[in-house]
Image (cartoon, rainbow, N blue to C red):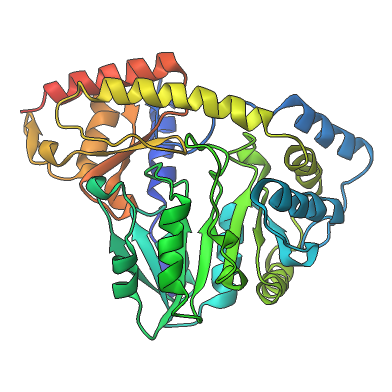
Length: 397
């Protein structure tokens, strides 16, 4: 008998991970695939961070760690929030988890009851609606478009709120669009949220350091709602530490306490060695993230210019992260031989099998007429990938 639980049966498979797996399978067969599906910096973890991990091993930090994280890591996170964001969070308001996805899961599982509504702007990161589903909540999706720079308006927010609304999920800089909310745009949303004191705001800021517009703006800066904001962040994107699996939430004390209680039963404290590496990363200056950001901006400009020459692709200029979310509706319904490209998923599979470039369909992000690709690849790979896409698209009829 192979009946999985209903909660697992109703979950969708992560399409970003699925596309990455398919590209690896083709690569294993000897196919030269350029993988633009993965949300991962192509830089290596800085040496000073690796050195801290080696030192942790030598100093025998190889035992169980405290559930919310080591005291020194909690302190450097608290110091970072004060230094870089002007936010005051005590160490008892921070919980370190096995990546930002784990932190998001903790927060939702700790605050959402069956039937609670969570407002999720689309395009959204693939796991948001699935994690809400896992918490037995209901996602209320607000659609956006290329024309609105993929940002919701205060009016849209106000119209989405009902008596069952429990939380709003925001991601800035955004995965998958790269859009960045300005301080004034956040302030306008806050004016709506002030009228609804029972709504929590879950602010995913994992791409904070990949920001081409200057200073990162957190919605937690607004005192009117700061006691309802939960920040989720980590070291994966800003310090090229995806495999180290360190994320955290900074939250009102009652939420942090609930997340700690939950984590204590599910996973306990996260990897001791990775935590010591994170102390070095978060406690350092931002020269390494700034170096990556400069490189990503150059790649963004290169990719946008090249994309303009490919028929059927429309894109805005992303202000952060390392993704382009391109509108491809003109290509849907076209054919290659007997194959009809009926959806963005079909287009992505066509590009993978015919052009050997891995991308992700917009349907995974709640926007079916788009595809996402990452420009966290070398300039040579980007040029080659876009040349292949151009050739493949021109062969469609």
